[in-house]
Amino acid sequence: MYPAAVIDLLGAATHDHSSDFILFDSLDQVALCREGLQILPRNANSKTETSKVGKLNEMNFTETCLPSELLYDIFDRLDLRSLNRCAQVNKRWNSVASDPYLYRNVDLKVYWNKINGNTLDKLKEKLERVRKLDMTWCDEYLIESKEINFNILKIVYAAKGTLTHLCLNHIRSLSKETLERIFDCPNLEELRLQNINFDGIEDLPTTSFCNRLKKLKTLDVSLSFITTKLLVQILQNTHNLEHLVMDSCKKLGNLEPILTVVQNHNQKLKSWSSSCSFKKKQNNSPIYEEFGKLIHLEELNLNYCEPESPHGSNCLQRIAFNCNKLKRLELADWKQLTDEEMIPIISQCKQLFHLNLNFSSRISDMTLGRACENLPNLRQICVVFCGEITEEMAEYYKETYPNIHILH
Image 1 (tube, rainbow, N blue to C red):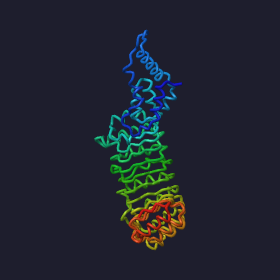
Image 2 (spheres, rainbow, N blue to C red):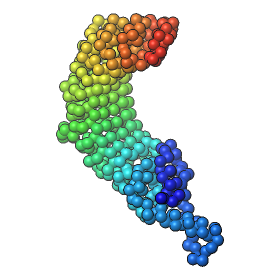
Image 3 (cartoon, rainbow, N blue to C red):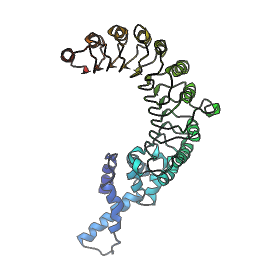
Image 4 (cartoon, rainbow, N blue to C red):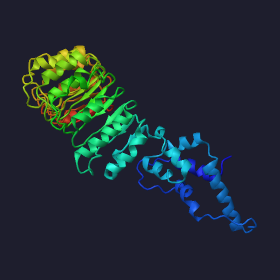
């Protein structure tokens, strides 16, 4: 049976420290109580001295006899700050706490205001086996964007064989060299590059890809300054892509070239989100019919991306009949959308659980009623500022279908 110090240590390890920046628990006792301990004479007889001897023996047991497997299991449950403090206890703990095995999933976002070049440089060796790495906002305290690019290059180079998930959201800019190094990670499955300035990168050499992105399933470039040409290049080399997010991208041109390459190279796509990216662009209704070729689509977000002349077109009809696996459909601000055009969606897409029709001024309570009645999996429908839907009718359907959250 383990002594009390080990039991306290186990209790401390299972505590969630993800939101604690200062750790006051038994780990501190184990790490710091040695400072007050002294070697006692052999003839110590008092209760106080006996108690101190007991604590010393207990401490020695904890540090020398605790199985390495148990120590690894405890450390694997700690956050980075706690792990760093454990590394300062003694040589053995430092060796265990520095093992790259413990740094497979690293979230630096919670420490964004503490990150600097020196921190990243010290972490580099520990991240050689990292699988999931989140560096959101980690360049806020770096003077030049070159510094963050240099550190990202070192980390990605060290971990390129194991890296599967990489999040660089809100990094000021990425250089061409950094981007090429990221694309060189053969096992990368998820890449998030929100709100990034691509430093004037219009495109990349063909040799930068060479089928290296075969495993990429999720790509998120929302709020970024990615160009149509660069995005098309990436999509042409990601044949297993399942989730594409490009909301509010400032430099994307028309929808047509992107949708064309997706239907030719990304047939496994399950979710498409382009909210606000193609607002007020010259996108004709026939282009939207091409979404019907993406038969595996489960989520489609076209908020604020209404085609020029949706009225009378069969774009939604084509989507409804071919993409009947849809679970989430976003059509906010489609001001010309009518009740009649929504009939195919409601009759064919029986798996829909979320439907957004906000600001669609021609939608009436007929569509609301049909959706609530005919979509068995529907859990939320948004009809804010749908001019034809009165408050009374919205309240009626809320009472009639309490399992559906109606936003009006």
